[in-house]
Amino acid sequence: MRVRSIRELKNIKNKRILLRVDFNVPISKSGKIDQNEDYRIVQTLPTIKYLLKKKAKVVILAHLGRPGGKVVESLRLDPVAIRLSQLLKKDIYKSDSIIDKDTLKNIDSLAGGNILMLENIRFDKREEKADKKFANELAGLGDIYVNDAFAVCHRDQASVSTIQNHLPAYAGLLLEDELKNLNSAVIKPFKPLTVIIGGAKISTKIKLIQRFLKISDHVLLGGALANTVLHVMGVSVGKSLVEPEMYPVIRKIKLTDNQLRVPVDGLLAKNYQAKTGRLDALADVRPDELILDIGPDTIKLYEKIIKSSKMIVWNGPMGLIETPFFAKGTESLIKILAKTKAYTVVGGGESVQVIRRLNLEKKFNFISTGGGAMLEFLEGKKLPGLKKILLTNK
Image 1 (tube, one colour):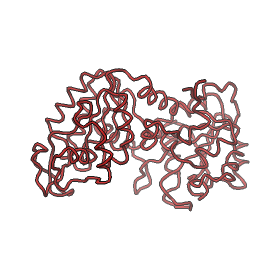
Image 2: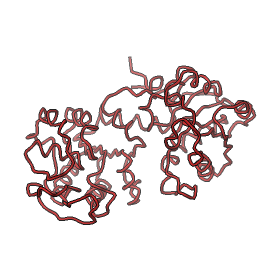
Image 3: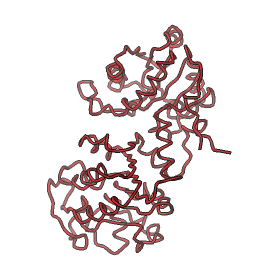
Image 4: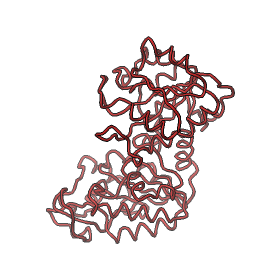
């Protein structure tokens, strides 16, 4: 694997760089971005600073929310531009449109080493349709395209994939780092390799599980997705979320093998609104109960495996983290991982959210900004946003 990186660009002084980023961050009702919610903006700063230092004209392409191809006032990028300006300690020029009669003039008049942020790219309905004409119009605004938005690389959209047919395309520093770390997890992982997979539905992660059962030493399951596996193993899961259509797929996996581990105990409650629950072995789940988190015996079992590993890849929470009582399993694993000497790679919005809440980001070797993109890359799928950036070695 070879990545076409912006490091390869020699003289980009006064060159118009179209920089696609993922600044899709929560904005408060008062129109501000909390410093605890600006993770995706912060992660892109090295790329922006690199381009500014080279005196390039940086034109930022970004989206916010799902406006559905029309202008939604609450989804304008002004709060994002303000937060980016604060982080860079530098003025950001913000356009109120994506492309209009003044856009090209504004870019041309931009001095090297400055930034112009265009309006929410998804205000144009052609963006999510990967429209060729729209991509060509965007390409007319720049000389070079740089993708630093790994989180949307699995989307076939005009500013993510189609535009690469019209401009030389390169990876930003964040995207390059994402690809390097995730690729090492599947191509040359440190051994023993342990993969922890949580979340709600096993159908969304079954391909990931199947792939890592081929290359990892241990796969540890948690969250509601483990319920379907437990049911196939003959363990009563009460009225917990299961996916019956996945039973035939699960039956093809060697469930008696110690490589695949499932929870042995959990925190149980009668509904999702419960604030507390009871602890019991999963063999004793009652018919009217839900499994909402892993228990201490499971945590001890997983901790023993983690301590014997040299690399950990984790995606997805172990329980219903929205409720503090059922976030204990996820929090416990985070604290265990924070102390391990193994190389740790973590992704998935919910998992990262808890890590940041515990202020333990610096204890992990790499935290991915990708959710769906991370899953698809680890599954071995070709991502549209990488088609001219990720080159195969020949």
